[in-house]
Image (cartoon, rainbow, N blue to C red):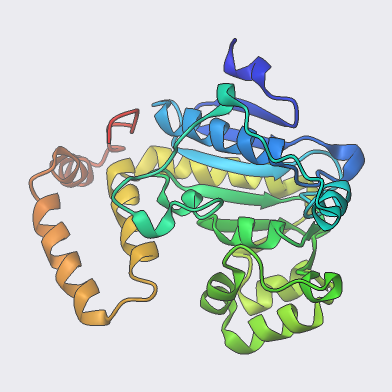
Amino acid sequence: MEESTMYEEIRLDVDDPVATVTLARPRQLNAWTDRMAEELRHAVAAAERDPAVVAIVITGAERGFCAGADMQMLRSISAGTRDAGSNDALAADPGRADMPGFRGAYSYLASVRKPVIAAINGPVAGMAIPIVACCDLRFASERAVFTTAFSRRGLIAEWGSSWLLPRLVGPAHAMDILFSGRKFDAAEAERIGLVNRVLPHEELMPYVRSYVADLATHCSPASIAGMKKQVWERLAGPYAEAEAESIKLMLESFERPDFKEGVDAFLDKRPPRFARLGGEE
């Protein structure tokens, strides 16, 4: 079965240099299910292997990004009747094995060697908050609305959001949006640092595509992969360790063909020709 026909709750579209994964349950505001989680993981693995893909964009179909966990799934959990069986055809293991701290249910997005970008086109709630927080970049439509909602469902800070949110927005903002479960708009999300940039709704996807196209034209995929690993792994580590690692990696990068190509391209006043990343580790 071709990958594009395997999916029931997402869509995967590859248009060099972008792979777009669309959460596709619009009648339920793209509410999250176990099936959707498996399909996303499978699609991300496929995009990570594909040398045509420089970055992976996750967005939602129609008017929302993701309303959080499907309420029928939550009801089955509370009733003890949930069937969380997996689909063997969707088994996939994206991301770097050498980042063991980021191999969890959704934190694997941080270990994927290519940039993962959340294009937040509408409401994002509940467990969708830690999922977008595990993405490397977040661009939002002016129509986006955010809420953790956990405290209003009798839950705690799910899926590592107690670690992720303080590092993105600081502990005071994190505790506010976690404790209250209140809704807040895209402008506030940008002000506190939850999203990188807010755009007019109709400009969101063109902007994200242009951002990835710029990466594909001017930046070394190998360098981006290395920096992504450095940033995520050193979020909680001491500065001295980060500095020592960066010196080691810098010396190694001097020996890579991308370094020579980057210098030559600059001196020759031409765009660089960096190799894409495919299925290799």
